[in-house]
Image: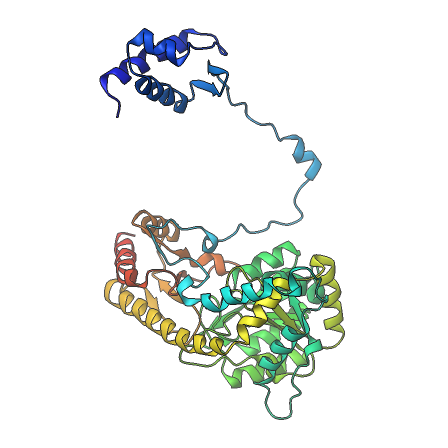
Length: 468
């Protein structure tokens, strides 16, 4: 707020500026003090206010000048239309799940766990140790640090049944995040213009990666227990596809986990058609009431190509993932990965292997299981009490999300807008379908911040559904 003297000076100078030509120099502060019979502080406040309005240009040691009015000229980028030509394919826009949320909203939209669910102490200590080592200056091997390759191979090998040869460290390729890994796999194992069978709904990142690589998606519907092997076999025979992308454990977004029996039947189908199963084990650390059962541990014939990321469970700053492949496919994937990114930061690899080999990592995972269970159950209870029209087919036994079915007539975009207006961010389920959605769904992340607000969020969703 300005006093009467400041307001009088501001108004007088504003009128003088309006009548002056751009670049006109104003009297010095001393002259304005004498002219308006005001203190230097009052004059300086008036000049600062006019400067803030963009009317003045203050040049230290030179003086204060009337600022030239700059009229914004629309940029003309039409020339780029001819230079770029038509896009070869329509790449889907990035989903709502990547939207940055303001601090004052209840964020149920993100695909990442809240910071308090991450092993921050282990990560900070690992970065400190890595910064003192050779990783900060040296280039790692193209396939990855040997100790990290060994860790991924040993982890997957722990689940190998008797009679199945576990993977070796040389089968492991380190890539800069699972998204990069999926793009590489779709290029190498499928190829542009070729069909790729995918679960429907499925991970939005796989949909985007397929569009970027000009891969044709063939949706395979999934039920409460996963895909139907007979439908999968028919799709392989009908399309001539040579790969099936799937998330057998706590699928994003549905939370479905394949049973061992279903896994065996799907493996039989894949093998019978001489195809690959691209297994995305995104939720390896996020089991709650069930353990993760990697399909790749049950196959030593090279039919399963396994993708496993540490980004969600260690830190979003540590974009490190592994691809486990055997045979010639492994060599082709490595060549493609080298051409794409040459190698993965040795510093990030050193941090990753440090974190997951600390005794505290196992302790952290035990606590994480209980934290996720509490958050999941709180959201489930909130929906049951306050949003009865939101139907949950099953409570997921792991993962980070609830997949909620809404009444068929629900206007999802209007619902999402109404929730956002009320301070709750949700994601319309349409973004997870590779073709037309089969119903109205929401994906709700229960691993986000402020779980104490989940009941309030459920109330907001319930009110929006009631008004829909």
